[in-house]
Image (cartoon, rainbow, N blue to C red; front, side, top):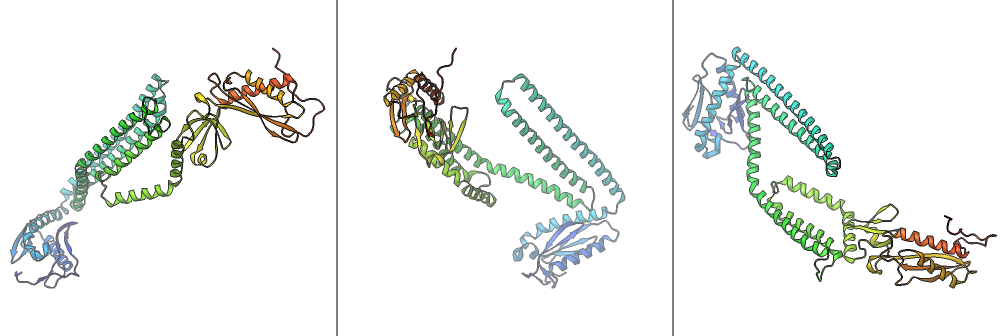
Length: 510
């Protein structure tokens, strides 16, 4: 074909590929003699089919025809490659390289087309595929058997460890979880290896036959490109990971330094004017949270994939979910910080909150736990504590002890001075009631049928650690004293005196 043949490009013409035996030979983008790229590709395919239908060696050659490259098979022209096919008006610079690649692909496709009708090659390919299938099946069977053997050995090793260390709470608590994690990891690695084995087997088998060889090559190239992308991604991520690791290491060192300083304050070894022992612990936890939050914010741009749109979308979605679902948790946390820094509660104090009475055992960011002294632990949300009054029986008592007080009702027939003396006697008999300051009695109400008295005292160091036990002893002594004196305590539901005095007997004999 002369070089002066009209070759034009049209924006509306999509590119077309010359295909032979599922193999892409060349891409056509320009018009030639008013033939569109698709028409040129169809003509090339027809020419290749005619040449391959004839006996011949299948020799591929190329030559220049003006500015175009002519491709021939056994001396017959099959298609032309124009400069506009490989780069537009300046495509001549790339035409030579594209022509070499097209010649190599065409030669390979022609040989594969000849191979499709060769019984010997088909038999060799089938035998090789069968052998590869058997080998892949044996390898997969071996991998599954190896996994089962490793899991059995892991179970046996864990059982032996538990028999040797029956009292090891750490193994008892986390051993099964670690075992389940190892089993899951082994299963994941096994199935990943089997998937790679299946992909390699499929690619190898497909490459044994001329008709499916291009598919097998693409599968192998896909795997190699994927592994290459992973390797390059890891290599590119190393500098960023090192930077992020350095940032996290500095944050860890800062939290260690801050923790040691505030623990000394918490233990009373160091005194700071702006911080006391009660708020040192919350300040340490809050400071660690702030340091790690800033470290994560600074290290975020250096994390692998941080600039990808998918990573940004996931972080935005996570932030939206946290903002919608954590409103209650934020309120709890703010209430917890308010309790900690207002010093409304301290560990070891005896308080009453919303009808729950007990010793403060833990003040957390979200809840506060009380030990009632009756074998119960009550967890109260910090928002509930912040919204109701707190009665503290320990704040105004020295040495961290607590107040003991109780109210009784006695009829008007009993002189009030006698009632005072009996209540003070009951306090004197109770072990753990402090002599200084001295217990005292106050009259809090003059009701229709009885007088209400309240005994107030403080516990000393010999009192039980749980206020419930100390109150039990005090109330028992009050009942004994009133029974010995023959004075009946009137119920708040009093209506009239009974025919016989109702009073508990004195101390049990023996």
